[in-house]
Length: 216
Ligand code: AP5
Image (tube, rainbow, N blue to C red; front, side, top):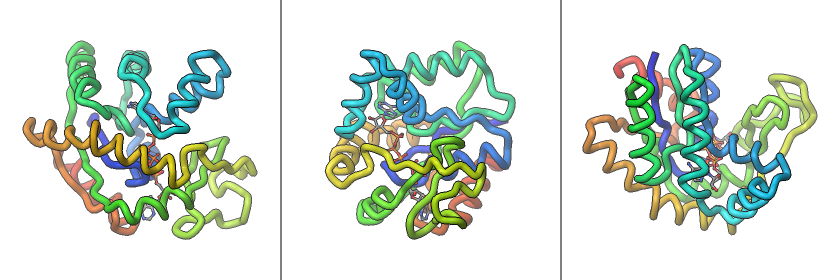
């Protein structure tokens, strides 16, 4: 069992690789983005505030996301946790370390997915997901086998995210470089950082991630 962080800018492929690890290794994906999108659809005042922040591409407050992770960590994960999109600030990274220590768990690896900004626009604007099972697709690189139908669960509920447009992506990238990229140095200093080429073909990225995990 291993607990890992997938670290990278929007569109780096964190969600895609996390879902493979869930299928192949029985790990538990903790995506704060997915959790916040669920809160958003609750229609509460808090959900509506979160929706506005996310649509602009800004980060939601540390307190909200740390609370979400704390709740999930208490539930335990047999195959280990994949932190996808969390932590995103130094405060969140410190909080994760404390939460893991408090629950008698450790962090085995932090995998930085390296990509360049030019590739991200195409990845983000071409992405769609299944509203039923969460499978991630792309118009060019991973279309569904039958147009309009999810390959995995057969649902026709295929969706595009409100923040998957060029304007919001600019803000998301700025937030990443200002607030999240310092975590690369933070985890490097702790001797926990590994980097993989996120621009490689999906299977090659998966093999590189597997190799980090197997050596963690
Ligand atoms: P979140 O949902 O976490 O989004 P993100 O970090 O912007 O990352 P993405 O989901 O956009 O990309 P990904 O790296 O998972 O890429 P994917 O695998 O889908 O966060 C959204 C918002 O929520 C934030 O902006 C913020 O407001 C809020 N939030 C979330 N967490 C927070 C936190 N901790 N603190 C504060 N606020 C928080 O791949 C993208 C596309 O590329 C797909 O179409 C895929 O098919 C394709 N693709 C993937 N890999 C490859 C490959 N190797 N080759 C070709 N195509 C590929």
